[in-house]
Length: 526
Image 1: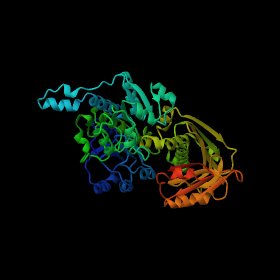
Image 2: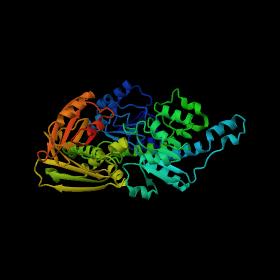
Image 3: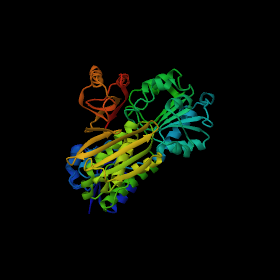
Image 4: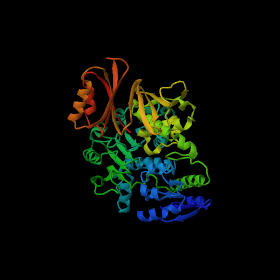
């Protein structure tokens, strides 16, 4: 009988499901070295946020088939190491959707009606009704930043409460927003018009300190902010100053830049702030939901069935996986690249399998492309199982074609993305059985391997351009690892691709676009 190790507290409903097919050992609070010692005895591992599944653990897991995370985030799992070992990693991306949405709504109402401070006052034998006069949410404007599953539910409920909904999400189509009775607007307009702002986005390089002093200054003095998404999206020091000085009216936070919350001036602000200790998913129902969801997936995998919410590569037989693995990496890389080049909201993506690749099973390649395309928006929430659904929910039209007649390489993959900021395309191939190469950018031929940090320019093919860009980067202490130029005709337009060692410093991209002859410039982080 298979053996399952449960190393964090899991609801009994999940344990009962596992017990149907396996011997279940519950051993919580294991020291890392003990987990490494015993993991080779198990076919499956079920965790929450406490256990760290490092590469050392995975290397020792000689018979492990699946790691199940009873929750959404998989930051505590080395997913890359698990994938290399052929271990399926699953999570529960929807198990706490309602819990998180309801907590955001509860925080909004608590802040509006001063409930925490009023409760404290009554419990201290006071009766100060006038001190706690609140405001209504009815007919107010709610700005929803991020219209994923949680943000969409918040918007739907808020709409039923009589609120007008403005939304910002560069990855959602206008049609999808209309279905939710939301008006899509740019972020500045949302900041300026909203009476309430609720955040439902992952923390990324782009969203870190999205709510900063500059953003807060654009808001109305009656604006209230709710963050039940991720800590670090709000600059807490700037928020404190804005609340203390009356720039905005209030804030309700469930997540923080550092958790647990340490010394913080936010605690001094009284009824203008509501603070909770990361309770978004802390409902009885959510804990049951995530336990049951993940336990069912572990059970299915142990029975030889596919998992429904795998975050790496599920549902492929080992022989098929081995054959397609390089092309899945190619597809994900090209999807990620073209998504960043396109920027803004992607409305249509075209995926064309060329040459001998046109004869392969296209579904995994299409899914891998969509996963790459959506990675920057959704991070760990997008996977090979839900990528197609996420794309559909965002109104992205997917066009799949094949062309076996294209013989530039044995097999190549073409991906284009069309959206609010125009259209971009990339083509890539696999060389030597495993090496990914980019062979075309926007119809300009090149031949470069993708690297972590890249700079792309569109420029006139004229003397001096390359030297000026090199000198400019050097003046900002940016080291160039490699450079290649592609052009269609002499003295026409050309593209330049530079691999750089580190991200570009702030402001340098704007300086690059000022160089005479440079038509556009993009940075990409893969």
